[in-house]
Image (tube, rainbow, N blue to C red; front, side):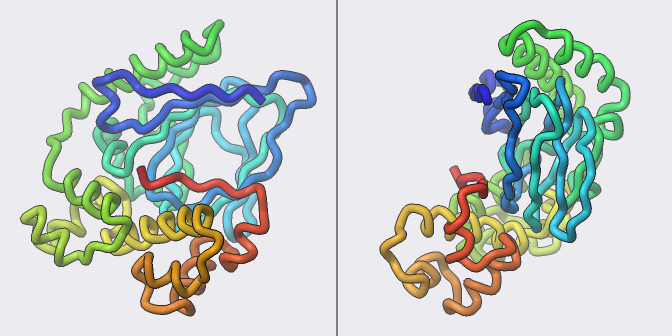
Length: 269
């Protein structure tokens, strides 16, 4: 597989963490099944070759749309290729996606939604540009220009909710909701209402996901520590609570999770 990674141009960099591409290099170059952990972000994908297969946590199997957005907020999924791979993907920061969408993020929580529903007036044109592009740089340029236009159309006010999302992420889910409200000047009701509209879930669930990602990183980077040590360092009440929550998000115990090599999760940075 050929993997390419790009930092977005400045007007997009506040909201988009990464743009990346994956492409088969030979006829038998397939992407094996991989488990993707909840990460609290929205990602959009444009397939210009065969779309992947997705398996949900309850075992439902479906072929991804050619262009889609996915919000993996609370549950893991599994993916694998379904033929020759070729796609470009845009990974938003947790506070970034709603600035580009007119459709509320909460409407596709834990789901995949075709870009025909999100951008019905623009979908055919951007897919045609991506599919006809003759190089990665042409595809990158087409996607970034498309996103710049969507950003200008929506013109969402960069309110205190962006600051609240950044605070929770930076604290690795360890700030209380009361502390977030105090820092931002939002009431609990305002915080929850705005979170649902722009991030797609509640502040409490988003904090739990951020704490889960933190423990994943700590498990990977500090294998010499006991689970009890890591649980307390990552602000879990006790080891039993930590293991229960870890299994809820990942489908595995911590030990089983890192015995596998086909698992992916997004860092908190």
